[in-house]
Length: 137
Image (cartoon, rainbow, N blue to C red; front, side):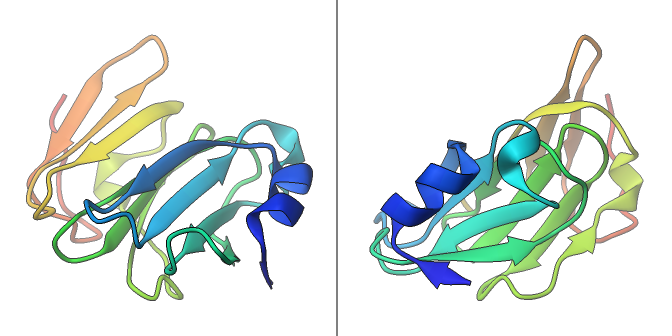
């Protein structure tokens, strides 16, 4: 589904957002149960139109985009971290990060360092976005 932001905002209650440095590629995750069945929203035209992507679990999603290679990281507060490369059609869970109550996610501009925080627990870091890469706390 592709639609203008005003239509998606009404339905998904988007709150958590990420963008590359020039602002042309954007991502947002829904907050709470109204976010649907694991949707993350992206825009490749500075926010004029938004596309809904099915990623995983229902609930709140936290997102980060690497500035140099347009990789998108999405962390679900009830499960796994997923990675996708532009145009963000295929999503791969980063099983090495484990299943946690994720509460935040960030990535370096070149995507070589990723950090994610859990609710009331640890901050995890990885230097690889391979699906089986290890994350240290």
